[in-house]
Image (cartoon, rainbow over all chains, first blue to last red; front, top):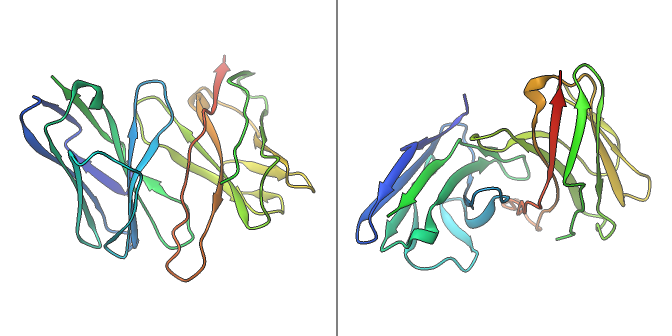
Length: 111
Length: 115
């Protein structure tokens, strides 16, 4: 069990669909992160939110749109994805200057 | 951020100590060494971190050389459940109270624990 909850666990979407990934934590952490992990590769940082403001965007295509509605919730809105965007999407949170806590991810398949 | 070099794979017998090396020869004075592991189909799990002193917790020990250019993660009594990819990461925090510190993963070491 992890303290970072990601939903859904699995998602299949077509290239014309719009969907959202959700991440929630109740540890009072003020930084939240999105990572993308392709098969047999390490996780790659996409976005960092610090105090609900976007602090880092690692040159991610605009078809991925993050949102941090409050300090406990992080969303990733998906639109017009490509099959190569199929991956495990990981959310993490941390307190300032503390280890990241990861969720178990959403496995996304784009058809 | 400083780069890390790890062996791609290692084997260990169950019940023995697993010693995982990591090279970070370009590490700066304010960069921390973090270790995470990822068991298949799960998110990465934090193990331990340190700056320059050796560290120990309930999961593992971290030995950092005096020049800080390399470190070793020690799992004292490996079990089958320790089979995972182990990532050594150098992490730097920016200035100020809101600094979060980027965590950039390298390729990691696949540790296989055998019965």
